[in-house]
Image 1: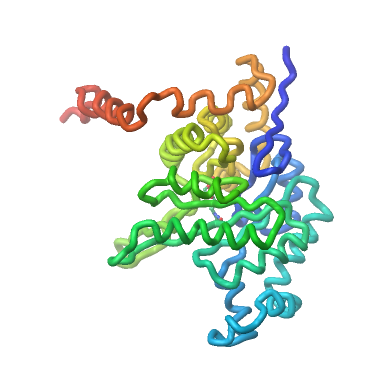
Image 2 (image 1 turned 45 degrees about the horizontal axis):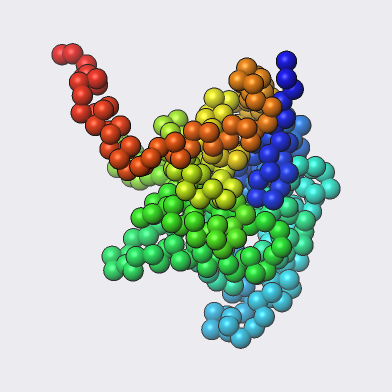
Length: 335
Ligand SMILES: Cc1cc2nc3c(=O)[nH]c(=O)nc-3n(C[C@H](O)[C@H](O)[C@H](O)COP(=O)(O)O)c2cc1C
């Protein structure tokens, strides 16, 4: 039987396999990360720090109207010794002394503001890469098309100016043209693209008639929707290093994501549900599947089923829709 090599190169990082633990409460302590590493995870994305937290500290040090006149990097480094910005860099430093797998710092952001200088501190603390979770919902009634896309690109450019480590963009899915955005991010040297971030979901409590948070854990159906876009992005922007994130629940999903062009999978809900002990099962499913399909490396099958096998994506989608939903294949429950 052939031995299989599960190594992948993602965003300039050499990973022993395609399992990355997504930014969440799973990665908010060194101890939890040690357990994940021992279970076989290839890298971790730390729980995010928020742009608002960084800006709050900048504003405390210099009032809003003064911000443009002062050196923000100086303010941050001065302030950093006192509060949670410091905690975050200390956390990275501690991770780097105890953890061998790559540690990716994460900033949740939505504007191009002075907070971008903080990225330098994360690099200095030893982060192997930075993931920027650009999270903004656009509700402007008078909207100039492309403005949100520009914000994503400007954030990337600003951070890239300040750091040498890889910068990964975790983007939302609600764009007029995701492929165009990914293409532009790649042209502006994004080292990786995570498809997609998780937006906050509303639920309604019917008894209390109030809004409540939706489930934290992803619905399984999210995966196939993401898979479609990964498949298209992998074909049309072949240079982009894509991570899929969203309801990657099992080994089958990992293989499917790679076949459709993902370099790595960022997993979260499945570990909340099944615990870190589930990682060895994911890995053994992967290696068994590779062996039974005669693959020795991930690159031998990555992207094999991306949408380059489809001549016209739009036509394909319309035909599939017609085939599946305009026929009598789908029957309602008999009454
Ligand atoms: C409890 C919880 C906390 C999360 N916190 C963050 C965070 O701080 N930053 C971030 O970028 N994503 C965060 N996420 C989103 C995950 O990183 C991931 O993208 C998302 O959950 C989809 O993956 P999954 O379906 O495997 O859970 C969080 C998710 C959960 C469930």
